[in-house]
Image 1 (cartoon, rainbow over the protein chains, first blue to last red):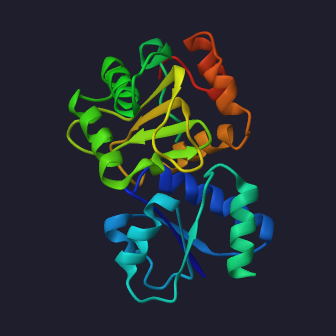
Image 2: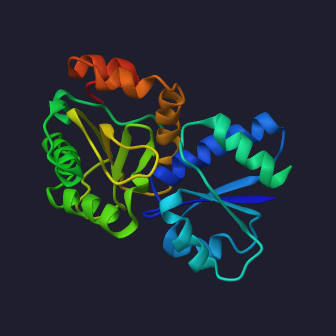
Image 3: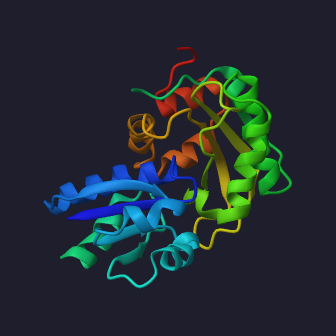
Length: 94
Length: 150
């Protein structure tokens, strides 16, 4: 299983999202690879991913970048709220 | 790898910013003062938000201003600006911003571990409020668990 965390520049925010997504997966006792990507690289990074985590602002651009795909785009409001990320991932993967 | 140090000149307490650009530029000046970046890095942090929107407001009241690694990054650095008056960045949920953290990294892969340290601090939902109310740079360092020098 693969999850991709996406932000505009591919550093900083996506790294925080990656770290907290890994914490959420631990809580759910699920194992998955979590990669960080920038918007420019998301189509390649997410080709074999089940879920893309990103912010509401970027979700439209992410959907456009991946085109027709079965990968689910999940919008995170608070990147530091592991409870929120856990809930979102449970809904997508559970 | 731990977070870079946070010297006094990388901290601005109670800054007055008229809009989000001014708030981001304040963080850019702090990164330049502390020797982490050249002045142009602030322009690139503003450009990231102009291009992609206010997604850098990653939690209520907190903006993580940053840009890609580039020749204007001299060394990895972090800066903290607390705002006297909260400033809207245009985020649908997390506005207004009270704390701007400026981040400059020289290598996109190496910084994940240091960012994990930052995540540890901000996983506490009260952390942003505590930093916003901090009285000086030493208090901010204490809250973030950072050192004044490397």
